[in-house]
Image (cartoon, rainbow, N blue to C red; front, side):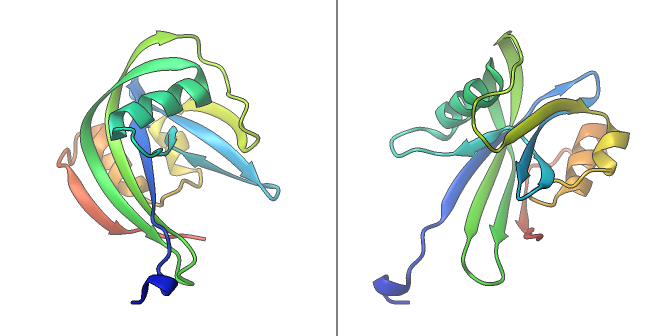
Length: 151
């Protein structure tokens, strides 16, 4: 592939924060469509992955977290080739702060979702099965999950 045809790969960090068996998720709304994501976002040049994740939690939810172990890595590659996101999911623990929704215009809501609620919502990247297995203890291996693009 020539340098002129190369596209950028976006690196997105996300945090798995569980309280009382429920998973903290943020809801984005775009084009009158809503979907859920693990809190997180893009890594800025010069930031470590864990620094980026801590910053994103503070910006999106107003809380301070401690990023811990890398749990999952997931590619999200659009079939059209227009987007390629590498998602790196870390376990996190809450340290301090009051939960509130940040000012990013895509942010619509946040909530600790139970396993039943998680089963009924659209999440991106599409790795709901692996999340549920991790939360229930059915599969606690750290793993590369492959490509999970979903429209």
